[in-house]
Length: 146
Image 1 (cartoon, rainbow, N blue to C red):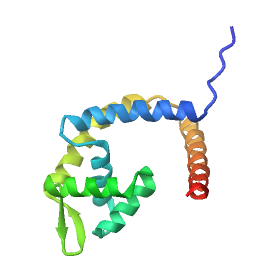
Image 2 (image 1 turned 180 degrees about the vertical axis):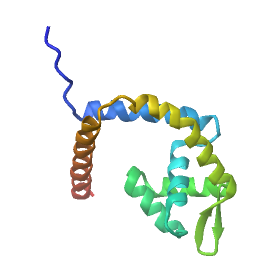
Image 3 (image 1 turned 135 degrees about the vertical axis):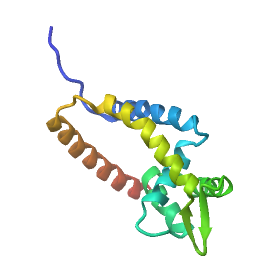
Image 4 (image 1 turned 60 degrees about the horizontal axis):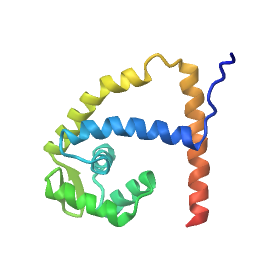
């Protein structure tokens, strides 16, 4: 019997993405936050400086490839839930928003360690290179389609 490694392709990438995202969404659901809300809030948290709403939407749109109107609606939800606050022309996370992301991160850390643990560093490096190339090429194709 031959033991061949599965070939990396779009299906394998999608299955891995949705499995990992499913884990994260379960954790986030316990805190009443959606995946997209977490992405927007994390983007606001990790920005070097407070961002204007349009800049935050554009940054998230570049990552998620979601409709900018949907992302703006997500920003509005985070404002309504007081996880983001308007500070003049900019948005900044509230203490509650920071705490939520920290708590969710602390809950997902041991799960992530179990998922990623034991994978040889050279395999992770190779996968990282392949995923970066796939992302670059897919973004280029998306630009052509737009």
